[in-house]
Image (tube, rainbow, N blue to C red; front, side, top):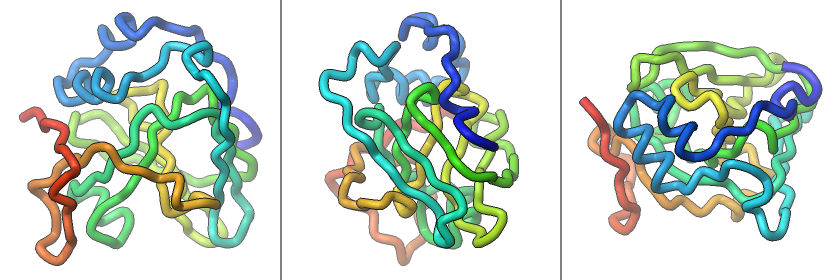
Length: 179
């Protein structure tokens, strides 16, 4: 990905229209519970969230607060990150700007649709994902934030798949997983 390809404006859809495209119940719950915004008009005061890879070749900026912050404990996230979970912040694509080239790897997610994980081709840092099931979102991985204190998780996902050695906060509600 180059330049601001994620920041290009897309046709804006209302939350109801966006929800109609979602076919997996857990994704519909995620959309509803995280209050996905239909446009930047819903953002009262714009904040800038920035981050990047280990070597600095890839940088990103996100305008406004995340729509949702979650910790995913699924086996795919464990394998992709080499850890027990992936902490991520969901941002609307039109508010994310990427500078520098990334490489990507696509694999089926829990919905059966592809999840594309983007990483730096130089240092290998896993930076963000773009889930096919919710194409209007970019999931920024919290470990790449310039200020990691900005990540405040509100949900857990696939909690039942957590590694026995990985601590799951008791006060972090779980998004239901469809079967």
